[in-house]
Image 1 (cartoon, helix red, strand yellow):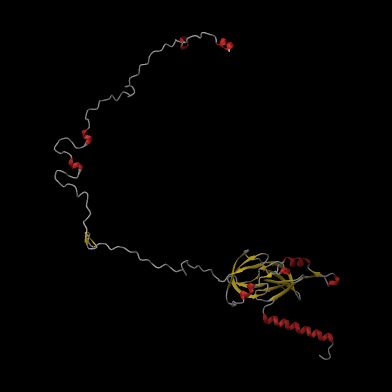
Image 2 (cartoon, helix red, strand yellow; image 1 turned 135 degrees about the horizontal axis):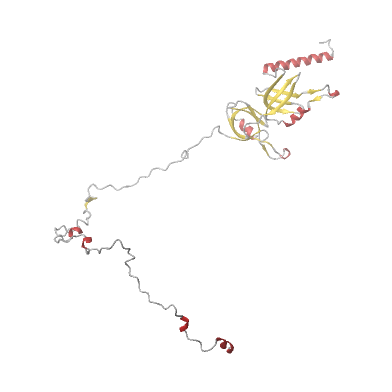
Length: 322
């Protein structure tokens, strides 16, 4: 090392650190291996010419666009179509990346993977937190999603910012405790509010309420004998039918009071006039049996105005007199 030039020393140090970084990556987890491939993850950050994607194994990868041409001095540059694609990607979304390898991870294409719904209830576990977002994994799906904290207040210059009270509430929870919160999708997933309980519980309306004590209703005892009340004798109520004269000649039934010695029937309909009904000729119409009224004869040739008296003066003379 003492006889090496400064340039050679710098090259050795560079190789050492590159090998160290490579070995560290192999020990920590999987990397993009091969010449081309596709991966999914959370778009963690981006710049004008690069993006960083956090895969589902919690490993961060930086992708840069493909290079076209020679060096920058000779007109070479990043692929313009890829640069325009970076402007449409919103940080915080899950994306699908198509990449290639040529000493660098090159970004061939990318597509945002929006959630299936525009909002709802999320139940899962917290993976990591920041002062702007939280990473949570759904219990059913098993994929990490990034949810940004809701913005409160106005502009940052006016005191506005992310709601950090939610992060303070999460510090009291264990990593193994599930959480439940409502969210919405407005460009990227955003937290709306947290719930204290993971599941809704319905409490019956009578729980925690004091029921009124039962009240005794006083009922008088039924007398043991019909003719005794409180030890005193009481006469039985009189039956009006029993008060009738039970003599042989005065029976209570009015039909029995009819004179049975006579041969005449007691039925009032039998006492009606039993004269025979006059016979009627069924062949004749009842209207033919009616007598036609006599109409006096009228002289049709007589004029009723001929019997009126004639006026003595002319009506025109009366007009002149007026």
